[in-house]
Image (cartoon, rainbow, N blue to C red):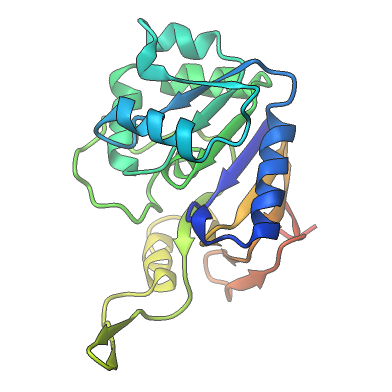
Amino acid sequence: MRLLLSSGGNSSLSSKQKAILNTQIEELFRGLDEVIFISYAQKNRMRYTTKVREKSWPLKNIKLIGIEEYDDPYDAVKNAKGIYVGGGNSFLLTHGLYEDKLIKILNDVIKSGIPYMGVSAGTNIACPTMMTTNDMPIIMPEKMDTLNLVNFQINPHYHEGPVWLKNEEVYVKHNGETRAQRINEYHQNNIIPVIGLFEGSLIKWQNQTGKLMIGDAVIFHKGEIPKKIKNGTYLNNNLKII
C-alpha cells in the first residue's frame, strides 16, 4: 500500500518544498498513463477537476481524469491505475463516497497496491473516520467511517496556539478553541492517536510505516503530552517514532 497524504495549503510551500512534493507525486504515479481524480469534496465537480488539472497537476505526461467524466464511478475506481482525492469539505466528500458506494471498493483497490494521494479532505478520509476534520457539517454522510488505510487520525491544516485577528492596526486574540483543544475533545471519547499536520506538511506512507517528508507535525496520544516532530521523522502505524 502506497500513500501520499498532504495537509493541503501547498501554495504556501517554498520552491524547495514544492520540488520535493512534485518529486514524490511523480514517484507515486510513475509508469501510469492516467490517474482518477475524485472531486467529491467540492460542489461543482467538473470545475474543480479542471482547476486542478490546469493549475496544480504536475505530471503533464499522465492524464488526470475526473471521476465525474466516467459513466460509472464504481467501475472507474475498480479499474483505476492511480487515485487522487482532492480537498474541500470532508462531509461533502464522505457523503458522495457513500452515495456512490465507493468506500469499500476504494479500500480494496488501494490495499491491493493502487497508489493513492490525498490532499486535506482527501487525507482525512484515509483515516478510520473523518472525525478529526476542521470542516463544517454542511451535509451528513451515511457514516463517519472512512477508508481506514492507516490506524490513526489526521488533522490537516494544524496550527499551534490561538488565532490572532488584525483589527485595524491592533492584533486581537480570537477566543475559540485551539486545534490542540479540539483534538483533546476528540480524545475524551476516543483512543485512536491523532497527528496534526501543519500547513503544507506531507506524509509518505508505505504498508505499515511512514515518513514526514515536508513540514512539521504534532502527535497526540490520549493521556500523553503532545510531541512535535520535524520532517524526516519515521513513524509506525500507531504514530510511534521509529
